[in-house]
Image (tube, rainbow, N blue to C red; front, side, top):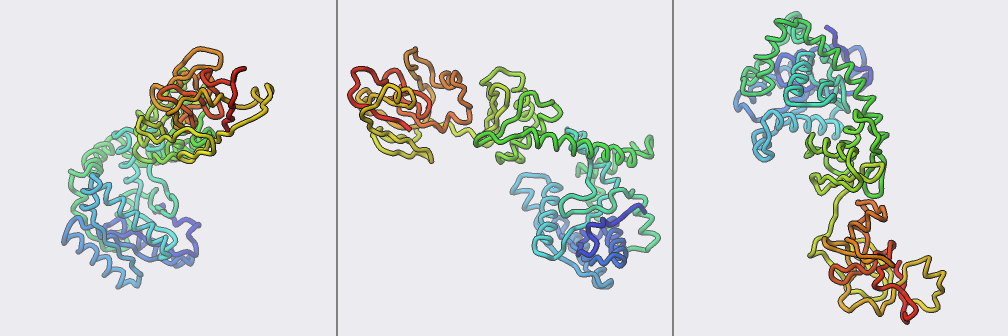
Length: 431
C-alpha cells in the first residue's frame, strides 16, 4: 500500500481522526504499527457529530472499545452539527466539516497532539476535483486534496479505496458502516455512488490520472500564488496592484488584497472579475464590494481600500482658530502676522474675515464644490481628480466648508473665495 507517514512527524504525537468507518480504522491500524519504528506516539481522535442519533453514538462506542482493547489513547469530542447548520444556514456536510476541523485544531492548540492525520484517499481526491469542477472553480479548486496543510496530514492520499479494502481484509481490521455514506441526498455521496462508478467503467485509471493532474496543478498554483503575493503592495491604508499585471496573476492578487482588507469569504468571482476589469477602464472608475471595500483605477494601478465616505449627517465642528481633531484627523488654524509674499506661496493661508459665520470643519460630502484659486468652480470630486489625489485618501482630508461650498482643503488648496489679497487684514494658516 502506497502510504507513508511524513518524516516531519517523526518523534511527535499524532492524532488519527477516527469515525469508526473502514478508511479511518485502516489509517489508525497503519499508523499504530508504523509509529513503532519511528518514535511516533499515536492517539485516536473521535468527533461525535450529533447527526444520526443512536447510530452515531454506536460508532463512537465502537471506536472507544477498539482503542481500549488495543491500548490506544482516545481524544473524544462531541459537537452539534444540525444546530450549526441551522444557525449558519449552511448544508450539513459543510457544518460537519467546519466543526470537525475545529476539534482537530483544538487538540493541537491545547497540546494533546502535534498533528492530526485524516484518512482521505485518492478516491476522495477524484470526488473533490469533480465536485469543485461542477460547482465552478479556478485552478486552485482543481489542485485536489493536499497531502498536508498546516497541522493536517493525509498519509492515504495516494492510496486507492480498493487498496484500503485489501489492507483491511489482510489485517482483519473491524469497522462500522455509516449509513449516510449511502444516501444520495448528499452532494458528494451522489458523485461517489452515481457519477464516479460510471467514469471508472470507461476510464479505469481515472483516480491515478486525476492525481497526476492535481500534482501538476499544485506546482503551478504555488508559482502563480508567489507571483501574486509580490504583485500586491501596500498603498496608504489599502493595497495596490499594477494595471499591467498578467491576467493569470491579477485575479489572485485581487483576492489577496481582499483578504487583507477583511473580505476572506463573502466575495464572489464576479467581484474579482469586476476589479480585474478596471485595468481596462479609464482613470477614476470604481467598483463597490462587500464590507465597504472599494476598488479604483488610479492611473497605472488598481487600488483597493475601505470606503469611509461621510454622509450628510456626519459630524462637523464649528470653525474657529486653534487645533481641532475629527475622527483621528487634525487641523491647526493659526493666526499669523508679518507674512511675506514668499511665505504665502509655500503654505496654506486664508483671509479669516472672508470665512462666513456658520462655516464648519468636516469631511467631504456629496454635492461639495470648490472654486479654484484664480479659476472657475468645480465639483470637489473633479478637483480631487485633477490634483491626482487617490480615492482612498479623499475621505480623510479635513475641509472648512460653508454648506456645500468648500473653502479650505487642508493640505491641498485654498478657495479663491477666501484667498489673501491686498485688502486682507487678518490671516490664518492651515496645517
